[in-house]
Image (tube, rainbow, N blue to C red; front, top):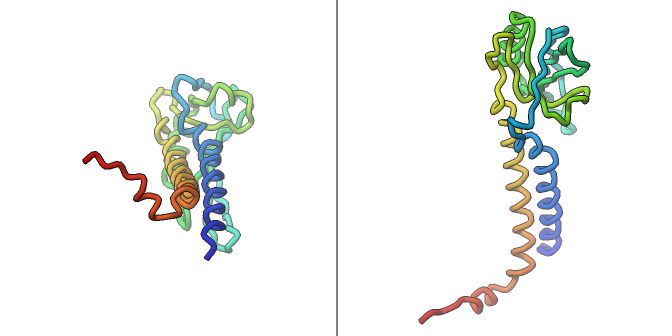
Length: 180
């Protein structure tokens, strides 16, 4: 077994995982409420879509999407979740019912995504201003992904550092400092 080879692969995986953690998950996870803007309007289109998704290994799962538009903007607001083999997403069904009953909604998105076609949704409130999809709920998926990616990155980099600088067990003994 070539430990140097695996240590270098660990470094590559580690760096890639840390970059992915900060590129994909950190922008949503570290968004502050003060950086969000509120967009109000009448709901002009509201649908839930269920799509079968196949992985490269051949396993199937179902992706659910709640999509809606407001008459005050050109954006399409989308919430997505992989629901595995469940036939229905109860959370999205409840959100759809609440939005249909309300008729209008307020959506909070990043100021920098105001002109995007599908901005990231951080919070949704109905016409009575009661929050039906919260700020913390939107960030919870990013929190898990960030922690897993970051931990894998630290492990891979640590594997390389351990191999590179702590090869010889006698080297660790010689660096110990004795005070007596």
